[in-house]
Length: 427
RNA sequence: GGAGUAGUACUCAAGAGGCUGAAGAGGCGCCCCUGCUAAGGGUGUAGACCGGGCAACUGGUGCGAGGGUUCAAAUCCCUCCUGCUCCGCCA
Image 1 (cartoon, rainbow, N blue to C red):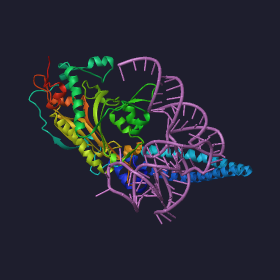
Image 2: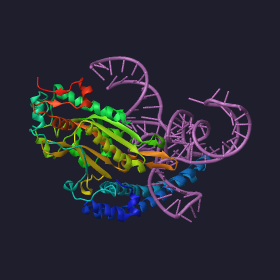
Image 3: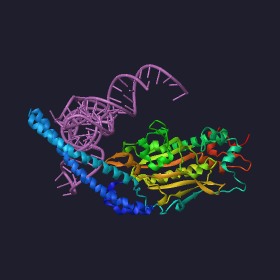
Image 4: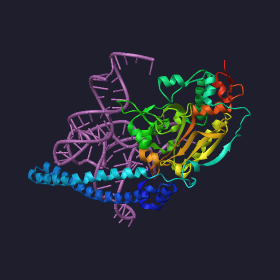
C-alpha cells in the first residue's frame, strides 16, 4: 500500500512502477483512484461544512438553554435536525467512496527499489552471488526422506494416518538435529544482537488482513473453528502485528527481533505438496528475523539481514547463493526481496531455504506503525528474513553432509546441541 | 468459564450531557538560582488522524473498538476487546 499523495503528486512514478512489474491491467485503476480521491475530498469538504454548522448551532443551543431562551433554542434544534438529514446521504456516500478507494489502493504495488532487476516472473530472477563450492560427491545422494527413513528418523506414513498428507513424525537423532538447528539459529541471532521472542501462534483476523493480502490469507491460513483466530503461517505475522497502531520512540530504533514459531500453511494451489519428502509441508518451524527501522536505514538492514542467513548456512558448511527477485516476481507489498538458496548435491541445483524482504513503509501504513521523531511522526520501515526454516534447512544440512555409508556428519557448530555427537548413523 | 473493576494524548492523570481538544503533572523549550551527586524556582509550548491554504492559519474526526439515545456524548444505554483482582478448571 502506497501513500495516496504519491499518486496525486507523482502519478508517473506510480504508473512506471506498475509497468515495471508487468501489471498493465492495473493501469486504469490509477485514474480511477485519482477520480475517486477528488470526489471524496469534495464530498468531505461539503460534509465538513455541514458538520461545522451543526457543531456551532448545537453550541448555541447550549448557551440559549442556559439563558432559558427555550423558544429560540427549539428553533435551532429544528435547524440541526435538517442538517443531520442532509448529512445522512453525504456520510453514506463518503463511506462508500472511501471504502472503494481503499480497496483500489490496496491493489497498487509498493514502489520497488531502483536496484530491482526488471523481469516478468521467477524465471528472470537474478543470481547475485555464490558462497562456498557447490560440491557433488562421487557417490549418489539419496532423496532426503529416504536418508531420514533409513536412519529411523522419519515416519510419514503414521503422520498420514493421524493428520494426513503434509505432516510427519521426526524421530531420534533426526528429530534432535531438527531442534539443534533451531537452537543454534536462535543463538546465532542472539549473538548478532537480536532479541529472542516467542510470539503467539494464533492471531485475530484483523491482524491477518493487516499483514497479508486476502488471497494469501485464503491460500495459507488455517482458521480455528468458532473463534476469531488463525494459526500463523510465519512468526512475522505476530511479530509485525505486535506493533499495530503503535507509535514507537525514535530512540528505540532499530528494533531487531528474532522470533521462533511453528508455522502452519494450507499450501492451497501448490503442487509440491504431493512430494513425499519434507520440502513442502503443512507444518514446519522457523527462526525468523524482523527489523523495524528508520526508512533511510532499511537498505543497510536488508543487506545485513540476508547476509546473516548466508553466514548461518556457511557456518554449517552448506554452499548457498542469493537470488534476487525480479520486478514481476516481487510481491506487491515488497520494495526488494531476495531468496537465500542452499545447494542440493542430489539435484545439483540450489533450492530455497529463506527469503529476505524489505517492505519499506507498506506494512507500516496498513497497520499504523509509526515512530515519533524530532520533526513529528513518520512511518517506519519493516523487514523480515528467514534465519532457518526447518525441515527445509535440515534437508540442506543432511544432503551436504551425507556420507557414502549412509551416515550424516554433524557440522561442528551443531555438535554442542547434539550432546557432542559428531555423526548420525544407523544403530 | 463466573464475579468485580478499570481502559482519556509519548507517559501518568482530572473530568460524570453543552462553557472540554480535553485541567494538572511528567516531558520538551527558554530564563534564573545553586559549585557537587536523577536539586530548586520562573516562564513558555506542544500534543493523534484526514482535508483546505504559499503561509500565519483554518475545518472535520478523535477519550479501548463498534453501534445506539440526544439538537448536542469522554460523560447515558447496548455489544465486543484488553488489563487487573477474586473464584472455578487445567497443562
